[in-house]
Length: 627
Image 1 (cartoon, rainbow, N blue to C red):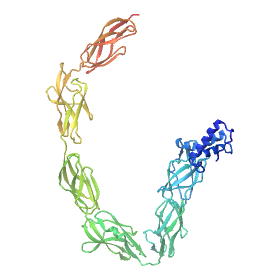
Image 2: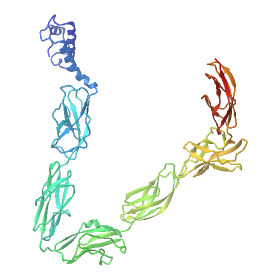
Image 3: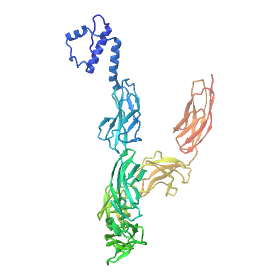
Image 4: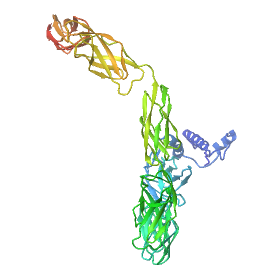
């Protein structure tokens, strides 16, 4: 834009707008594109005197307002607020609707656009510009399923961005076909069924089509098993698989061989899983029995004893799901295991197994002496098949222990006798024994009574005894406060214990008409420790008596004093008069109190308390007011 004026055609205020526009152009860089940073006087004069379009004051104001608005946006409360989208799971390539809210006066030319941010922070636009909420966005088809991305909205005038919210992409499906045992071929007789297994991945539910046109829809099972019953040799594969994100990849081919009179075969499966077995613990032997067996055929597990003679150790079974356990008569050691059939008589190959010993754990008799907050080690010895686990009596637990003997770290707070609560290994919980003693050297245990807040108390009242302790008391320790009775023997007092003080009720002590000095102390039960002894003077629980007296004549606004005398009880005394005047905790006896009634008043005691509890009042004082 070129700014020109005509001589004598612009008002003085117009020069101000020329300066505004000039400053505006220089500030935004527009001027710098066409004019040097500093203008020679001749150039400035030429600008002032050159002919050209006239800019009005209103146009200057509008240009300034629009330009400065973008600059001011950074300090105004502009916001774009995205709601949660974690409930929304979509597929790559899908179109989604993104609602949002805005705060602030966005420019009329402003547009909003959605962006997708991946795990590495790469940002791509996924929508066209929109003027308002909601935005229609498209997830790129090349984005990976099962990944979590972030979505945000950006604006153009002003340029700000919203909060980021996560969104998960669904995963496209895959399907892999095998026989139920994981192989790629199976042999059956005519009329028999073969079980196939489909291993699925991606987001459920799945639908797939088998090559024989068998259709499975919306299955949640993974793996999914299905039975086929071909009349002749037939290959099977998965023709297609799909889920909410469309079709996916397939793999695997199974050959089902159909034989009218196949030769029976008997094989052990997964023999390596039988390497180590325990007496009395059930285990399963997997077999692969193919071919034509005679009616009434049974399978049985056999184990060779030390002499090499095989003996049946399972109940004959026709299903081929063989489960048994090692009899207790077989001692730990190496043995041969096989499976036999009865019709026809067939023997599988043999597998070498080891019958392992059950765990025996022994805590060695150690005697450790530890300082406060120190850690020590106890030794546990194992026999039998590991890995082992052990639980000590204080709750210390370790598992997956591979070496014997094994050191266990302990850090007791007190002197502790350790035992094994449970221990075992490959064969489950075994037997355990032994104990070890760990002593902990801790600071000496002491109890001290702080300065008593009062050295005199009434029988039957409750007092507070502040105290401190050092050292470490044992679990289950209890504190008690004791006081001497009339024979000088210490007796327990009802006590409420807090971390810093004890609330003690002075009951169960013989009353006396005179002040009696008693000894008081604190004791603990574990360990048995006694504090220092403090003296406490006890008096009979006499109720305090307060007597009011006095008489006077005053004019309105004048004050006079009335007198209260206290008898019995234990200071301090607290009282309230009939006019509402109240004094809390005075040791003065007698006590003079000033009163200034507005009219003739009779003053009495309406409540009285002392160190011995609630008391009573008597008497009255009359103050006459004359106008």
